Length: 65
Image 1 (cartoon, helix red, strand yellow):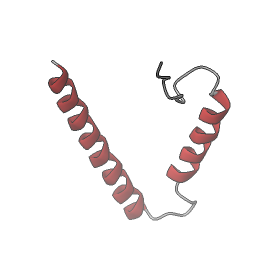
Image 2 (cartoon, rainbow, N blue to C red):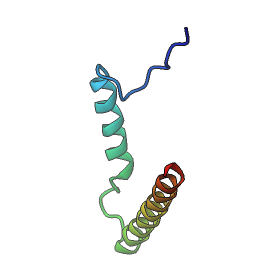
Image 3 (cartoon, helix red, strand yellow):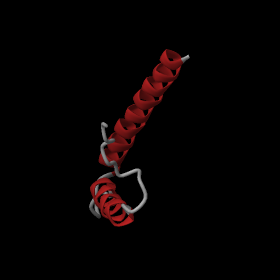
Image 4 (spheres, one colour):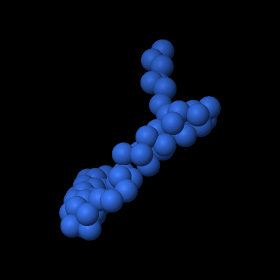
């Protein structure tokens, strides 16, 4: 009988999620004194990534129907 691989989505991984979320916050928080132009560039980049993710998710939903 085949066993399912364990994932972080299963209960019991709260500490790992906390560590990953802290790493994400640190990576996404710009250092103090970052110029406004750089902050805008980063924001535009994140916005375009979010748009791409939404498009991929919509495409995945269509492929399932």
